[in-house]
Amino acid sequence: MKKNQSPWLYQLRKERPTEFLSKDVRADVAIIGAGIAGIATAFFTLRDTEKSVIMVERHKLAHGATGHNAGQVVSYFERGLKSLTEEFGLMMAAEGQKNIIDAWLLLDEMYLQAKLTIPFSRFMGHAGLVSFEQVLLHLTNNALKRQSGLATEEILISDVADFLDDIPKEFVNLYALAPQEKILKLLETKDTSYICVLSSQKGCINSALFCEEILLYLLETYKGRFTLYEHTPITKLVLHSDMAYLDAGTHFVESDRVVLCTNGFENVTILNETGLDINTKFHHLVDGNVGYMSGYLEEMNKPPIAISYLTNPEAETSDPYFYLTRREYEYEDEKRYNLISIGGPEMLVNDSRAYTHESDFPSEKTKEIDEFLKKTYTGNIKVPYVFTWHGLMGYTKNGVRLIGVEPKNPVLLYNLGCNGVGILPSLYGGKKISEVLSGLKHSPSIWDVPKEYDQTKHHEI
View (cartoon, one colour):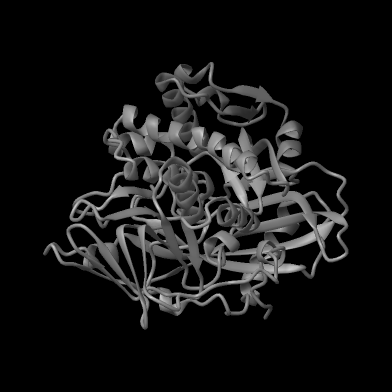
């Protein structure tokens, strides 16, 4: 059994001083959670309003899902546009997709305004498909993108696939044929079961290090308006009609508005003094899902890449898929390497108390990753791994992040739910929350917090 050691947390500043809540405090806005969602919400709120902000974190900055993720930056949902359209209608689903695409610009804004120099790569990434059912689904998604004015994915289908004559004529301009060798080369695989590749803009960044650098920028730029209290768990949130109390045990935070920027899978009791029950609903918003990842170092002689391998032939599935990322990484000797990260194995948890970051990395998950690599990847495989890590992700019932005002009490706002692909949605959520706090009204969207939550979970690649 190996320890849970994340390569992202490994690069954080060990000497950075932390402050915990040692007195009662007050601010215009309180943010619970100091991961990428909380940092983005603080960034845009401080930049675009005059409000004071206090952020509280039960552990340390970026030590939750943000510090235990795959580090990929992608502009898609883990549900296709077809599935989102069936639930929300094409116009609203396409607008939600556009929100994530536009969040690339938000990432650039944060990076440039804070004058960051940490590695951030952007490139054309790929996903491999193994069945006609998968291909049809993604062709349908592509057709809906074109219909709604969104940029389409590049879809290459093997010219020896046995279903070419069965592809509906309506999709004729939404894909191209390519030699099987090209499909395998793009996917960096030797597994000939992959007969189609999807290509779109992806990126990679150490989101934990990104959060730390943005934090230092905020502390310096907004002195007197911004404070972070770490090691400060909030056990109870009391909402009144015009303010909130955050109970941290011996002390509390008072604020006009409070924003939950967590996985959503938290041990916090919410008491709504206006009379409508929020606590019960909140604890049914999100399911917990633990993701497992491993990584090793090699010579930096290849460009960054992010590849998904959709191994289940079913078009719609709740099964996890494997993913591989190669990116620049600075290790102990300050020499730059390529870090090869592989993930895919997952485990559902019904109670966050059953999961701790201190848990060892299960040997059976290492075996799953080993078997996938040996079967699939053409690169140089180095084991044992330098890093093995896992993290708790919050999955909303419909796979869409919750961003906006709590209908039963507008003092409470949400920017929560990792859903496995959380970096760009977190940034969009932070910007939108800052607009809400500025008084801007938004049209109904896929991100809205519903008045009554459907317990049925949808999950589609």
